[in-house]
Length: 99
Image (cartoon, rainbow, N blue to C red; front, side, top):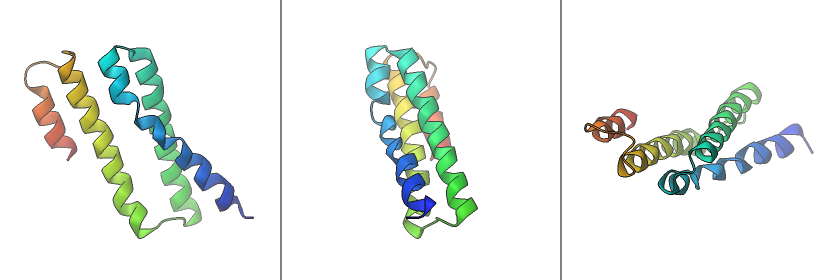
């Protein structure tokens, strides 16, 4: 088996760390949310680097990766607004800016 068969699934397996971010914000677990967000950001960057470096790009990945990134950011902005950590109408323009 090549390096691709081991590295790519391992990097992609960390992406489900995105899922509990909204719950963590709403529950007030901010240090855990920061850790999960850092893991998600690192693995997303590593995934992009490996895909470009070794030619592991796919047409589906070119579409889904940016959609997943934007969904994470929009979800975070909305949850931060719900708990009152973002004030003054910011979530509206933040969500539009990430789209």
